[in-house]
Length: 170
Image (tube, rainbow, N blue to C red; front, top):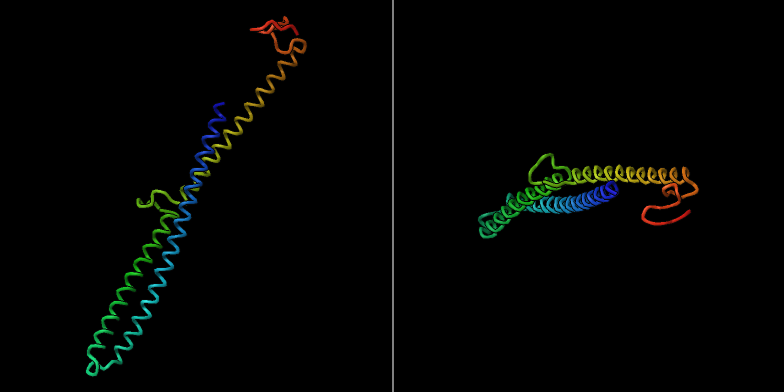
């Protein structure tokens, strides 16, 4: 009975760790999507900034000083956007990697790799306890069969035809 309970407990832990690993896997996927989005935004902002820089190089300040400063401001806005998005992309990438396999980083106490290993360990424990339970059942069945074979006329009673607690005659 204890082995069966231990098998059930270990199976429950295995399922819980597998669920955690799946949740962490989903987090990794979301962080990977965030990385892609921010990398794309960086690419767009850099392209815009380069276009504006080219326009500034060819711009005649004396003909349109307001237009020049507007374009100059837009260049720095796009440049700052590119720097910010690049930082966000790097952070999302690092988070994705951390949730995948944390390498001892404190900000990622759980990760797919650890949860998967814990689930595997608990599944192994459940299998061991299940095997022990099956062996216990086989031993009990063998002992019952041996008792029945050694006393075929009385079906396991006290050899005088009486069962303890009853008055059965076999």
